[in-house]
Amino acid sequence: MMDIKEKERIQHDFKEKMDYDELMNCTRCGFCLPSCPTYIETGDEVHSPRGRIAIMKGLVDGLIEPTEEVKNSIDMCLGCRACEPVCPSGVQFGHLLEQARDAIYQTNKQSLPEKVARKAAFQGLFPHHNRMVNSVGLLGFYQRSGLQKVARATGLMKLFPENLRTMERVLPDVPKRKQMKDRPSHFEPLASKKKNVAFFSGCLMDTMFMSTNDATTKLLQYAGCEIVVPETQGCCGALQGHSGELSQAKEMAKKNIKAFEDAGVDYIITNAGGCGAFLVDYGHLLRDEPEWKDRAAAFGNKIKDVTSVLVELGFHKLPLKLDDQIVTYQDSCHLKNGQKTFMEPRQLLESIDGAEYIEMKDATRCCGSAGIYNIVESEMSMQILDYKMEQAIKTKAKTIVTANPGCLLQMKLGIEREGLSNMMNAVHIVDLLLEAYENANEKAAQSIG
Image 1 (tube, rainbow, N blue to C red):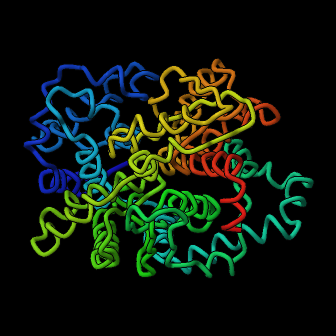
Image 2 (image 1 turned 120 degrees about the vertical axis):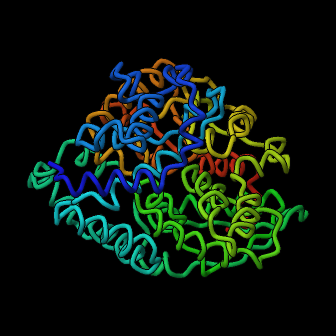
């Protein structure tokens, strides 16, 4: 329960941190309701975009008090931003959500375990690449040493909640520490040079999903890109920004801006929809800091998803080949709603010889991953995932393609939950495209080893 002083602090922070003009932009028309996954699942206005905006405005105006129910409404939001493209008034709900969570979590009295966990993850782990390498390295040791087999055989995993047990089964094989530390910073094009680009390698993407990063750079090389990978870059800060830690997110943004601004490149390439949407928005994140505002906007203007660049460079017109199969695509919410990248992944998939592309119903609806949402809001996440899997199964696809690591793990989780791991798989789009390109261009594949 919140005491009086805590409620007063939260109310004060809402008045200080919320963009009131943006709150007033909402006309309560309700166009957002059919696009909101939590409203669809609950039918409750408290869990809709306009309902949450009404709560935020009520807190600022002093008409309602901050309660656990209010906090639950804000926490239950996936942050998928599906409400933004359908809003006639152009309300930037993602910005309002970040401000609201910052107001709540910077004043809310948290339990000691919660404080320790948040500080360890948001400040102690993700901003530090070496610590990420070491932490993910421990997971790799667990996988390779036999401990994983022992944990499963002895029933030790039964001590964990069901969704975490299933998640453990679908995690990728993690590379060794030496592989994660020994990363190249420059790549020459393997075709006629078309662009100079920089690659945003990320934190989890360059450790747990390192093979997908390697596939990304290979594709860009085949497409005619010279690539630099600034060594001083770090985590994008999305997890912090979406979880009420905006001050930490701003520091991480500044580090990345400094790392890339002297690279002299045409684009900064990302391969994770969640990271890309947050990077694009650095200009808004640092809008109140005169020294950084313009630099952040310039940085954001150079961000492009790898699928967008590949289509621009005509990669979809090159020979691409897979064994005969049906493929479908699950949109990354932030790639579509944040980076406005929708058609490019589909163009690439439709261009693969042997792959029959079938669009699943509601491909753009959130899969329920949403960062750590599938851990902290497991019940709602699994409800949303169950619907998503129903639609994927109807396509009869062998392969579900995604463009974000969280979506990838969530779809793998869904496949495992449905008992379909022998019939269906989930893959990041760059891994599938690399396989298709190298199948059709054996000499090119051999030249890069």
